[in-house]
Length: 258
Ligand code: HH2
Image (cartoon, rainbow, N blue to C red; front, side, top):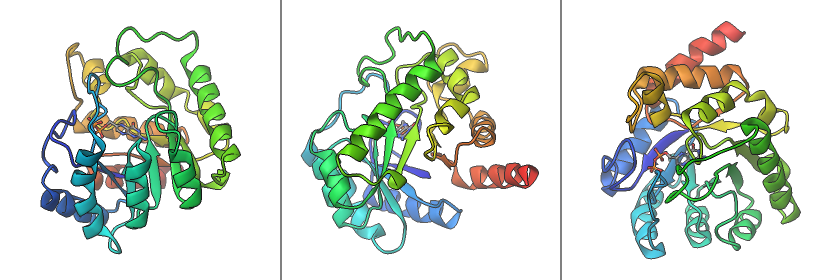
């Protein structure tokens, strides 16, 4: 899954795809490089961010979705039902909701009626405050219990279970140690029986494990290692900024596994 942030303030690629033409070109390039799907988002969820109004989010993503319709498989990264509705009308196949259907009560109906695929992600708290002292007794089992409950909720509201994937939400209300423990114990999430999506690309925990306590991002080398480690523990969708390099790294990891 390639990442196209149509935002001025995302944590690692702020502004590079904020202009529609740049976002469209990046999405097409990622698809050519081997992304199975491109995740288009108009709202940064980096730690500390406060969200964007509906009309601004639509203004950012709609021109991109219009241009990609028919050529590139698209996922929409949003928590808003109206953005998801417009995106599905414009051909998006998957709704990626970092709130796991907790922010907008109408989103589940839009996904169910649109027969869309759905990604449910774990987040403790909300982006504005989520990195303020997150604590868990057992992070892997608490994240699994949360995702299992959200999976039931989605299925009970009409989303087909075989359309849902689950995501531990690396960096969303977790310390560096929590993030690495989750990656190491991904089998606990795989055991829930749904495909597992992991988004660790460029995240600050990668820079911090390399020794920079104030890192806001992590380097490509570390992103690739984390993606391969997640793949080897059962992740089947990797959400990444650098598609070509990840396709190459994962092809080699897959050849070794075979
Ligand atoms: N991470 C980000 C955004 N959306 N969606 C899923 N399912 N999983 C993730 O780990 C995830 C996500 C944050 O990364 P990015 O989009 O690069 O940055 P920003 O939120 O600052 O735009």
